[in-house]
Length: 469
Image 1: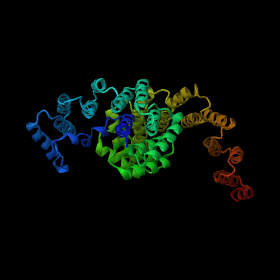
Image 2 (image 1 turned 135 degrees about the horizontal axis):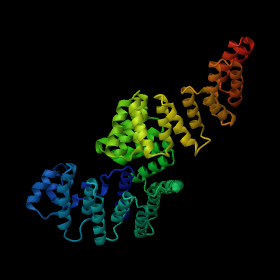
Image 3 (image 1 turned 90 degrees about the horizontal axis):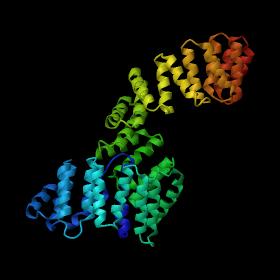
Image 4 (image 1 turned 180 degrees about the vertical axis):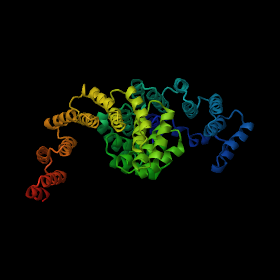
């Protein structure tokens, strides 16, 4: 593989981590990128350890690779300040121009410390020394994405492609697809898919290319194709947090929560605080019916960030399913205040209000939505239920009849009207409503069963038998 492809492509794992809300281990700063500068006696695989590097550093205090080795070991222990000091020493003692890997290590450390400004300054300092480094430009692009400045990130991608030799078409394909994914251009995903498939034909079994293609398929809502390529990538190298996150997501999309949990737990083993992994695992546990476990993982997300509304919404719904209505109501009311235009939050809140008997507030919430979305049949139906449960049957009937009369093909409204008429003893009206139901859904057996039951109650046995048959 050519130099640009070898260095640049390894950075794309960083992109996926930014997208998932985590600052992760970049491939290019792994120990295998530094080992060539170590003293010979430390190059034996089992001899390479933080302890060995520290002992060697006493004899060679100005060896940059030894400082990098200790920095890497300190990071594994989450001793961030010490890691920063050793990365800085590695840079200082580099004889010629500082090694890109050392700058990336320092950037990586600042990222783990949530020091975005320091991370950006480090990359920019490195770029002043190595202005044509594709790897450094790639990291700067990722940092701009982290700062939510996609236009600045785009300029870095343009620079990366300009630095790529014209004859290296596969590299250009890779970066073009990557730019589409990072910029969130869902309308150009087909182009990204085409480029990545062409790239993988040129560079077969390229791990990060396969992972990005899987991510593309997920964004295209084609989880089966995503699983196919991601499982191939896992067979090559399973020790990869972005890969495990994508496998978790794809399995959830195809309705396989159990394997989703397995992959999500693997991701959490690598990074326990990863917000996306905790959210996906919590979601998967809810889908298996393990509500308490699901709530536990979602609660970890809520504790770590106040902005992950989807996690709190799922928590509210999970509490409701467990019968913990007040807990659910508290969460959902707070969410509704913060996100007054979010339909999913409002629907969940209305359900809770109906369940707790606060029918007046439920109707109020429905009306506030219907003011801007008057044809929303689900909200109209929920308003009818709230009115009915609040002993306002006449008003509820008007709501249900309007839904049915608008030819909205909203099955629950038909059913509710039939039940209302039957309970009130208005059996002929109920039968006419059933006929309307059968007219809309002629292949639905429930309509014929209800018609038979109503006809039998009215003493019309032949009509009942005809309906049952």
